[in-house]
Length: 279
Image (tube, rainbow, N blue to C red; front, side, top):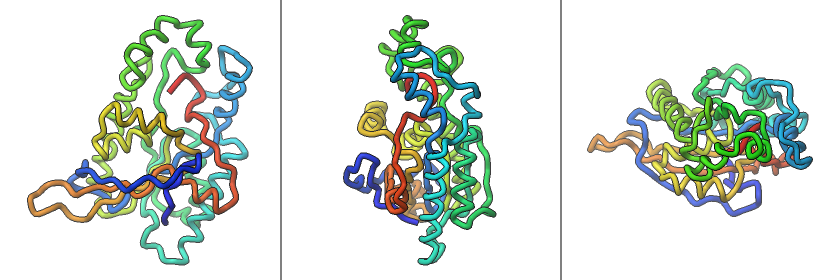
């Protein structure tokens, strides 16, 4: 299971990067799959284009399903994985962690069935859920400015990494739960190949945690490109701990790779991974 690391905008593969490993016990590889396009993505785009204050969507964020295109994207990723099995299964995931949000659960189910991996152990973990937006949930950028102008000003002052809307989470809050989940994965799945199916901000913050990036570094990565729907990213660990007892080195092998979709002739989308509020 490999990808060329190309991003949805056609940019060159990201260079391999190494950092001290977060976990003393660690998986052999960690794959990150963003869910496919959701109906929330479409509803948000329509609301923003029409200049509306509120996004017209009936479901809770956690109940928003995949769009038809999103289901097709998930199937294409699974087919691509199935084609890779002809070279052996030494790179295929051995366990899957999934956000409890419906669009992530559906992506995992469709992709794994298409890959012939429907019996793979699957763990639904709320620590990989989408960022929570509190009082800003369901609002467009215009809606936030009109209804909560002081909150919009506070976000502009603090920046999106540390801004926590009332009742919601900051990026730093999400990083804390991601860090906890990754530590547990290292302990419980040492030496395994782990696939995480989650959301754009979660995937960005997995990179933030594993590479020990700064606020400025992860925000620059976020500004450079959107994480494409059903894109794949991968981290590898170099093996056992060193003789000095320090954690093994983790290397970014692929980032925001869309080759599974490209090779299957699928439409690549990269709408923001939320049906509400600014990231």
